Length: 254
Ligand code: ADP
Ligand code: MG
Image (tube, rainbow, N blue to C red; front, side, top):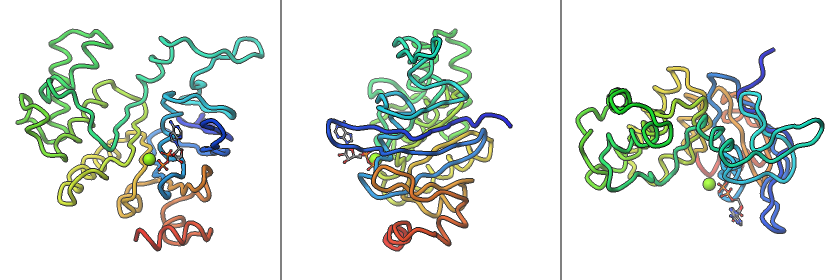
């Protein structure tokens, strides 16, 4: 049996006395899409931040592609990874947020090239070619020289997706990628994500778009109060949930 791409075992995270994650168990296999649903404040963003090691977990175990996030084992002891190795782990994970966080003074093309050029220090010509291919992939080939302020929210989010892909991540994580968009722009971003999923990208998607989860997810996890309440294929978790809390939530968003 091959190791899942992402494995979260009994992950706990507290801020002071506030226990936000109270034992999160999840796995994601290579090439699969996991959608996380759940009410606001249930710990979804915190969980993604822990996977990306923007937060350090208090207890439990998190691995990406078999490697412990943020720690290494020396003998029987766990040691925190130095910052440069944390950065290397982070480079394996592409992150797309609700806000687009593009560099405002860079064009679309320059935004996509920034990581490969400045972080990976790869040759300009190679980076530019890949960035143009990625722009084409998110259907924005004609916007290469446009600045973020001149792009719609949907276009900015597609540039943000292309920028994350430019680092050639093993895993893409999306935190409510369409929540800040005008309704008429949601579809184009979801379409880009569907394409990515079809191309075999491994994805964790926190979303309230239940239709997207039903269509694209291999696995849906419903989170509440810092735990995964229920997980399974969309046909089960969305259409025939076992847990009362899942039913209550879905009755509000569907
Ligand atoms: P979700 O993404 O499901 O809405 P979050 O992970 O953002 O939930 O937040 C879960 C809980 O953790 C909330 O009660 C939130 O206020 C709290 N929280 C999140 N980040 C911090 C932080 N940096 N410091 C203190 N509390 C936080
Ligand atoms: Mg959130």
